[in-house]
Every structure is written in C-alpha cells, then in structure tokens.
Length: 116
Length: 142
Image 1 (tube, each protein chain N blue to C red):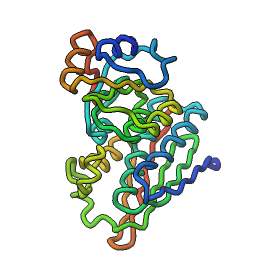
Image 2: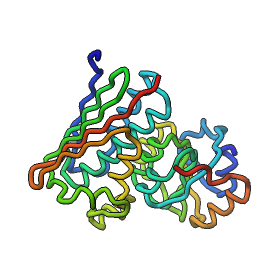
Image 3: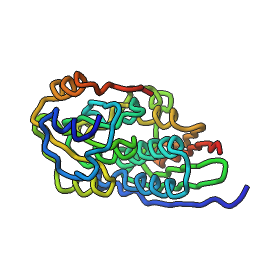
Image 4: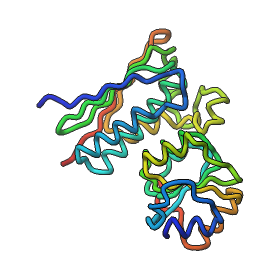
C-alpha cells in the first residue's frame, strides 16, 4: 500500500518527507512501547503510535521503517520533524484513536506482517 | 585478522532525547560499507538498546564498534551501578527502569534479551558499584 493511501485512510496530515508518499509499505506495527517495537517487529514499514518523542523516529530508523503515523491527535514536535527529515521517514498525524487507525488501515489491506 | 575499522562514541547520560544518536551514526557508516541490511539492522538494534540502557541506568558511557571482515564487535562500557543479578536482568519483562522512562516508551524489560537475540555472542562483565562492560559480536556471512 502506498504511504499516500495510508494518509488518506487515516485522514492524516502529512508533516514531512512528502516526496516519499508514493513509497510502498507492506505491513505495519501499532504500539506505544518502543521497547516492544524493537523486540517484536521484523519487516513492518509503518509505525502507528500515540507516543511523541524523538526516540520514536530513532526506533523507526533502526527498524528500517518508512513512515510514522501519530494517532489520538498527537502532533510531532519540530525536533521530531528535523530527525525524520534526516532519516527520510514520512511523518503523518491523525485524530483517530489507535484502534480505529489500525482497524481502518488493516481493513483496507495492510496486514501485520511477520513477527520476529 | 586484518586491522578493524573502529568507531568510538561517548554516550551522553544526561539527555534522553539524544539517546540513540550514536546508533544512527553507526547504521549510516555500516550502510556506506555495503553490509547486508540484515546485519546492519541486527547491529543497529543491539547497539540502540545498549545505548538506551546506558542512558537510563548508567549515566552514559562509551561505545566502540569495530568492523572486521568476518564480524562486527560492539563494546559498551559504563561506570554505572552494575547489574546485581544478570540472570534476572536477562529475563524478558524484568526491568528496573523508572516510571519516567516507561512513559517515554522504554523500560519494558526487553533490552538485554533483545541485544542477545540480535547478536551471535554477548558477554556481560559487571561489578556492582563499578560499572558494566557488554561485548557483542555479529558474524558477517559474506
């Protein structure tokens, strides 16, 4: 699924790296616990989270993820955006709650993928 | 064994925001060296978990990454409080991280087990009140 389609499904605002919106991701992970993302994620290209701090971007970078969707109306800080630009990770933010965001995107075809 | 390529980083223990900076740099360097994505990811995850641990528990420390043709060695050295019970610390879910760290998305007790899972060898040398040295190796299959 294109990152652009995910943004549309989640009615999300795109905050940076718009040039990568046509990039494809094949699975996603939803978590507010970065420890678990680091321990359980394998090939998920999209991180859906309600946690807002720079470690979210570093975690996504470590896992080779291409996009982050902040949920529950959380907004990325300038620090987060600067780091995401460096790492070429698309940052989006949606008013949807985690459950709704995951459900909507899953229902449209993006799956959970392989776990470690 | 030929001389390794060595990267050294001081890990700032004062600032949780900057934790992980060294791991991002290592990842970029390993990409430039043309290593496989799987190897790069394993090294990055192990080092990032270690870096976060050093910031949470040990007020920072020093990280050294040595790239040999056949392996990558990561040494994390700190002068923190030491680990009183390594077996307990290696148990998934065991954590002594404060609530403040959990609210930042870490401290689930997955750090050390995840470092072991992503590396081929891991050695922990620790003395309570003196510090901890963790040596991890990832073998490179070319």
